[in-house]
Length: 424
Image (cartoon, rainbow, N blue to C red; front, side, top):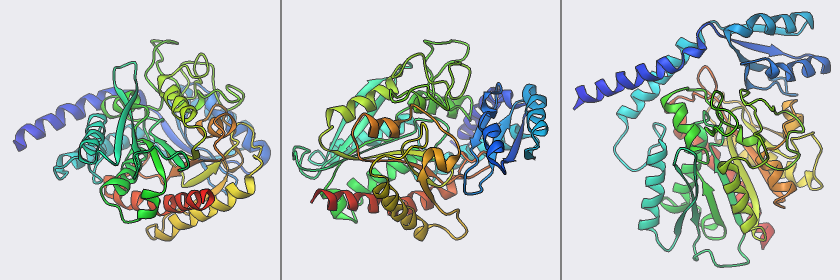
C-alpha cells in the first residue's frame, strides 16, 4: 500500500510541477511605497501583464509583495526606478520554492489520520461536500445541506444551514459566511469547516450555536480550488470560459453588482482581477446573492473569509468611503481582532482593522462585502483576511492549520455574541 501511495504522490507531483512552468524565470519583490505618489504607482502595478499582487501595501507600513513573470521584469523594475519607489527582490526562483511547498502539502495529506475531515492537511472539494452530507445525516434536526448551484465544471456548491430549532424562527438572526472565492487561499475553507465543526459536532459555546442560524458555504469556488490543487497552485479565479478559452476565469470578488468595474478591477480576461463580462456573470457569485436576498430580513451579519494578511475589513472598498454605521463596524472589528490576537501564537502578526480600501491603500469594486451591505442590506459586513504563511503567503503549512482556525474562532465568537445581543 505504501508503495502505491508513494507512486501516486510522485505522479501527482510531477503533473503539478509541469503545470507551474509559467513561474520559470519569475521573481518575487517587496515594494515599499513611502509617499502618496508611491502608493498610486504601486496600486497600478497589477496592470502590467502577468503581475500577481500577493499582498498590497498598507497604511500600517506593510510592504507589498508581488510576483512578476519573466517577460515583465524589465518593465516592472523600470517603472519603479523611474519613480524612485523602493523595492527589493526577495525570491529569485519562486517556482522551485512553491514546488517544494506543494510537495510538503501532498506529504501531509498522505499522513493524515483517517476520518471525514482534517485540520492537519487541506481537504479537497469532494471531501468537504461528503463531510457536509454526513453531518446532515447524523444531525437531521440541526443540519440542512442544500446545493445552491453547479459550476461550469459540474461541481456542486453547497451551503450548510445550522439551526437549533429547524430554522423556522422568523425572529432569529442569521449569519452568512463563505470561503474560498479566491481559489489559492486554502486556509479559508479550512476555517469555515472549523466553524461548522464547532457549531455541530463540538459545541462548547451553546449560546452562539443555539441563538443564531448559520448559513455557511465552505467552498464557493470549487472549480478554481481544485485547479489550484491539481494544476496551477496560485490560481485565483473561477474556471468559466464564456469570456475567453485562452484566459479562463473571473475574479469572483470583483463580480458583484455594486459599483462594478469602478476601481481595482480589469476588463481583460487574462487579468487576475478580471471582473467578468457582466456583474454576476458567475454562478459562484449568483448563489451568494440569491442566498442573502432570500433571507434578507434575517441576515444580520456577513463574513467573507479570505487570506492572507491578518486584516479584519469593512466596506466600502470601492472608494474608501465609510457607511453610516462605521463607528459600530470599527468598534466591533477591533474587539474581534483583539480576541484573535489574544489566542494567537507568539510572534504572530497582529490583526489590523479598518476600511478595506483605506487600510490596504487599494480600492477594489465589485466585492462581496460591499454588495452585502450596499445592496443586500446587511449592516455588519466584513472580510476576514487570515494569516499568511509559506513563500507566497497562500501556502500556510499544514502544521499551522489547527492554530489558525482555533484562534480565529475566538474572534468569530465575539462577532456572533454581538449579533445575539443586538437582536435581543
